[in-house]
Image (tube, rainbow, N blue to C red; front, side, top):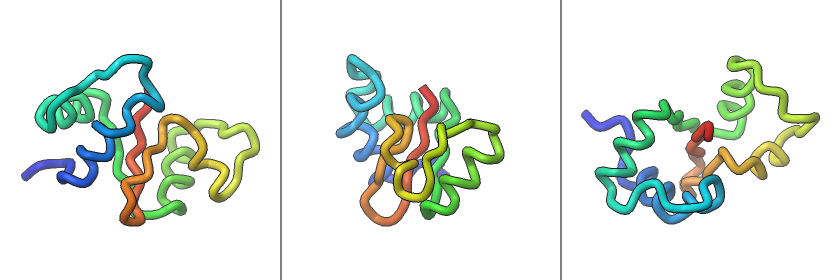
Amino acid sequence: MREYDDAVLECFLKNQGQLYPEPVAETMEEAEEFLEDCMAVVADSLEEVLEYFEEVGVDLEGAEGEEVLENDEIFDVGDGRYLIVEG
């Protein structure tokens, strides 16, 4: 079973420029391999995004709620989920 579905992979392929100066993947397979290698996480809600950063001990510089979504590491999948890729 795949860890990342098509919506997540397409989101990353389309928006990878927000985190990386040059593309790191060009195909769905490359995107999946890259996300697996950097242990990217899919959060089902904003609350899960906040919980993730709290658990890993990342200080979001006082950002709260939707302000957190402005971080380059967070990709809005578009269906209520968020992809977190720590660059």
